[in-house]
Length: 132
Image (cartoon, rainbow, N blue to C red; front, side):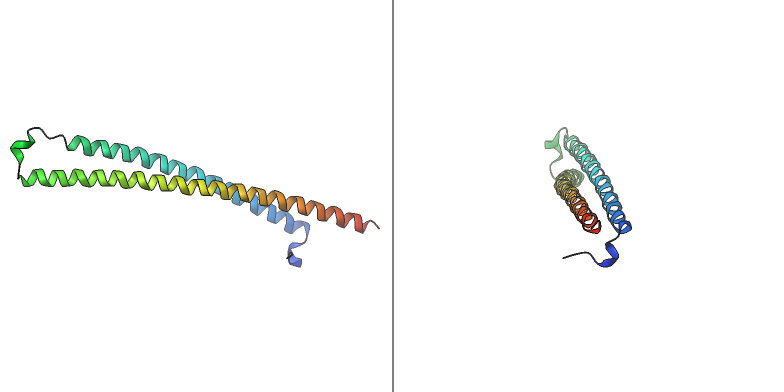
């Protein structure tokens, strides 16, 4: 498999390298953004869980058996706790995505390096053959 004739010149080579550099920078920005999102979602989850736990501390709960207000409040606090768990789970999933993105970025760097090495070898051979 080879490049089309439109991609065989020096300008095309520089354009490909430039594109790879821009994509690698974008992937780094994506990784940092996802890491921050995961970090703040985890912090939010911890805070939300603390709010739910605080809300469930009801004095004299025995006196309030059967109260619709108590049931509604407990339901609301349980829902907050579930949201906290969901935020934490989502943050953990974002960390997995971030790890995969880091591996993808590393693979892209290796591919760029391989491309540059191959291009250098081919250019050297071409210069050697052209000099005869």
